[in-house]
Amino acid sequence: MTGGSSRVRTGAPGRAVLLRAVRGQRRDLALGSVLGAGHQAGEALVPVLIGVVIDQAVAGGDAGALLGWLAVLAVVYVGLSFGFRFGARAGERAAERSAHALRVELVRRVLDPRGGAENGRLPGTLATIATEDAKRVGAVAMAVMIGISALTGLLVGAVVLLRISVPLGLTVLAGTPVLLWLGHLLGKPLERRSEAEQERAAHASGVATDLVTGLRVLKGIGAESAAVARYRRTSRDSLAATLRAARAEALQNGMVLTLTGCLIAVVALTGGRLALQGDISLGQLVSAVGLALFLLGPLEVFSYVNADLAQGRASAARIADVLSAPPRVTSGGARPARPVRGAVRLRGVSHGGLRQVDLDVAPGEVLGVAATDPADAAALLRCLGRRSDPDSGVVELDGVPLNELDPAGLRMAVLVADHDAELFEGTLHDNVGAAAPGDAGSGRIARALAAAGADEIVRALPLGGDTAVGERGSSLSGGQRQRVALARALAAERPVLVLHDPTTAVDAVTEARIAAGVREFRRGRTTILVTTSPALLAVTDRVILLDDGQVTDTAPHAELVRRHAAYRTAVLA
Image 1 (cartoon, rainbow, N blue to C red):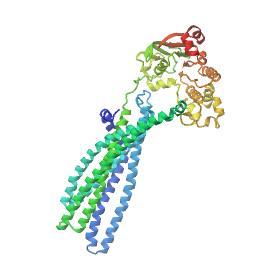
Image 2 (cartoon, rainbow, N blue to C red):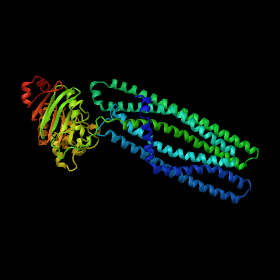
Image 3 (spheres, rainbow, N blue to C red):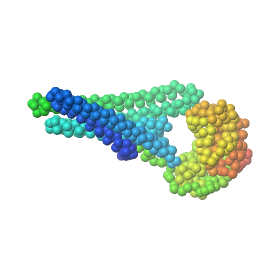
Image 4 (spheres, one colour):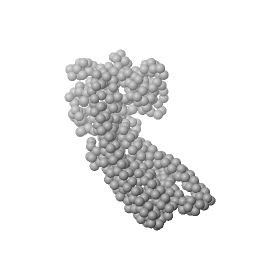
């Protein structure tokens, strides 16, 4: 996806994200803006007070007046310190809360049961959008507050200059809009390059995440050099995009600073000429020059604000792209019946390699599904878990089509446990109990561990179930991770449980024990085992043979072994 196409598609939603982030922190923004504006107004008054001191105390040699005006300056500086401290705190709070709100919104969209946000994006890309892009958009709140403060300082300085001399004030009032307009134009290349920079950085992060996740596999097949070469190319592209963005930002800042210096020079020259002509006093000249130097700060701030807004708009467009991603499946409004009986029916389902599949699963039945083509098994799992809707036909739960059910409610009734289910950072017990019902006690979790053959893992770990398993279960072997993931699926106690090859990484003895444990644990609840494991298929009530995308036969495991060569090849080979 190119930066240009992204802006065409998400420009308006991107602006909406920016506005939502700013409006959501109105209170802190208002407080920060008021305090910041007061601080800038006080900064503008400092050179004015110094000019007054020169005219009324220094020029006249009045020591009492000098002490009095110095006391006034001291009070002004105390106010400046107070305004800066608490104004900056309010601004930072608004920025961090805006970023936090966006992160929560992004995570909610990614976890939406309807799916779709992850389409075409690596996990690392989504992580970068939820962190770096959200941070940049949150920073817009601080930029808005600082911009308001700088504008206040600029207006106060201009008003004071008008009172000192109309030509000086008009010079500032005429030059400032021109500077702002030029700064906006100079920010356009930065916005484009900043978007490209974030795209490349997110892609590099996604590739790095994939490489780290598959590190063991890469080492096992000796593909480290190819992986390093791939990441090196991706990282170089990201570096090039970052350098282009940095050059654009440096050019913008340099040009704005140059133009600002020109304006300040004009103000100083005009004030000097008026002083020589006697139109303003010495103190007023000092005030005018001091104000001209002060105005350099607010005008530089506008350059910073423009850069932040340009980067914020680019990041907001990327966030909007995720938030507005179309769902993979439509959302029905019905809830599964209570209690869920667990009757599953497929009528004329075609999806992927599946062709006109008809299937009935009775409530409480343990059904095996053996597919001669793994792609057909994957297509069936997508339909049962409603990660995708069938191209034709219908899948029903207790007589209600799945597309009429609310996806979140469906997830509480039907759990599809994938073969490659991941573990999370935390303890083994935390992982197993993650989806368990709120009233599930330790005894229920212990039963799930035993049924999955994971109780021996608990006994072998130094802290038992309280042992941390590491990110993605990195401290466990492949077979151990698989058994803990199976225990988690069992502990969830869903009315309908679909298991996909849950024992591929365990030995034959353990597999037989797990098969018996799953059968016993799921007694009375609908269970579908999509697998080619003879040990698991042997404990089912019956097995569906899925060959060439169609249901070829249904019978107990032993009967299918006897009468189907395709079944023997898939299951016993």
